[in-house]
Length: 385
Image (cartoon, rainbow, N blue to C red):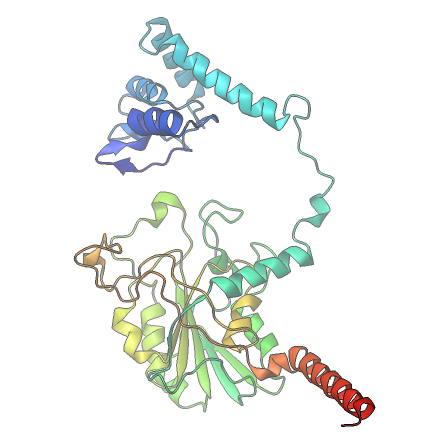
């Protein structure tokens, strides 16, 4: 699928050099190229200013199938007219049809045009959710752990007497999932699908005697006067997809910044950022004791708790550079002005705590040790040493 983006000022939907020249020619791509939703309309500015030209530019660029959600009659009429006038050569139509048919034949769609529903009851089963949970904990990136290297905050103490969980994203499954989750632009709330919020995961992970207090947007007085052992702040950006996510400032959504200030300025805190991309963090870094980039963990919030409390260690690394200010952008590794907040590939690591190992790993190690000692004693006995 071709994107809405431009390259060197040329809309990708009209870029013959990349679609036909490079993809189909140099890379010898044998599949077919499809447009994005109303993608050819955006070849002109404003969109749909000259639809006939957009059809001509897109098809001649090498697009084989066009996603036309509303104006299909106009598209068919314009395409037929352009072919009859040889503005779009018949060879281009033959190429598109050949590519589409090749893929359909390869997939067996003419023999079996409908989906096989025999495994539909397996979707979202526990094995799938366990794998998703594992993906969550392995993708989390620990960006800061302690205000000094010798005093890490993570892993958190499970047996703390009273902890605070704050932030708009702590108890919102829709925010964890982001855009393109059942609905195009995503949704706020916990009824979008089945899953576990980060707040619920925290309550499950801590000791039964630990009091967990949730306040979405607490003030500083509330935070400092309630005897909390520490706080977990979960903030980020609201769901979006495609153009709706365009941002010139890339800031944490309100009231996230004030929550960080009110909570982390009063007690020890770890901040978890839910986002689909790096956001502005530099103004708040010094207030935080620990910082985790959780991206969009989806339905399995328990994967976040797994590493927060040390059942598993942090292992994730940044897949892109985290900037200090938006004025630095674009910025990539190797640029002369490369001065990131966190560089590409950065990520602190922690080890799983003994509390988890003792339930399985340590027991196995102890048993193995006893077996080794027993075997040595037997050998010594029979050898007379």
